[in-house]
Length: 339
Image (cartoon, rainbow, N blue to C red; front, top):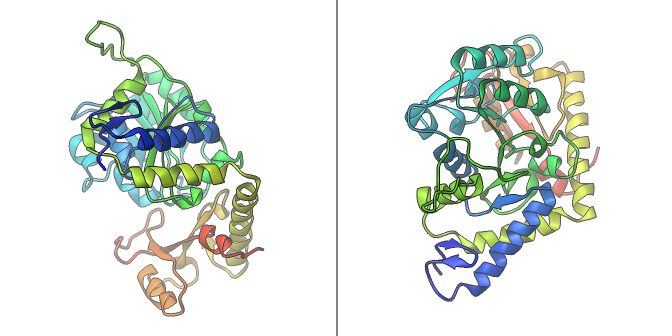
């Protein structure tokens, strides 16, 4: 059934049950992440990101995100994505020697380009993030700091990684991956705040960011929410609040650490020298310079081992061939694998 709007403020009648399920998802998300605000309607992580872009930027505005070829995500400024088409992205990078985010370069670029928004987060990065330093950089130039925690959300929720809620104005995530819920997205804020651009309500009051983000999601970029998925999100958040989930996600992290060590012991280069989260990026050039990630991916799938080819920082190959692999442990941990 259609349920355009939000709990208690729908455009259709007969939404009493979906109001209850959506409010349950919101309440559980806020409890899980110690947040004051949650929007559980985004259909995906990319939709959640786009809603934040719509909320904080005007077309042509400058923002900063991690370079796609260094582990960033399409929705953080790729030229083939709406984020790179409608807005002006400036990319920061990882340090070639350490394989970790170069915060000094980030700060220099931020002062040079003065973006309106700075994005923390990646799709192929195995280390924790220094949200506190990024907030200092953002505050110095008057920028919004957004964290996309789609990959490590489960680890963050259970206190196993640095918490972006404490330092970032806005946090986005998917609800699958390490949260083990249905495919979908979500937007969080540790504390609601007045929008810094002075947008006002019809009554002349300064709009809160929660109202601006809600309007960006609906009716800004989406119509009716997927209430069957939102009910599943509520179930997943409930599971993530339990002790068995903590045991699971802790095992995910342990498995990733020992797997990364095993690859390095066999002579493979793991970017950044290991992992803090659930995944690792393996540079094949260190051991098999003539073999591409595509070849390895296609070979392993014949043995029912699913990994994905992935570019590594400073890769000379295309994203359709790649010199690396991205490997993660959430799925095999769900199946019961331990160290």
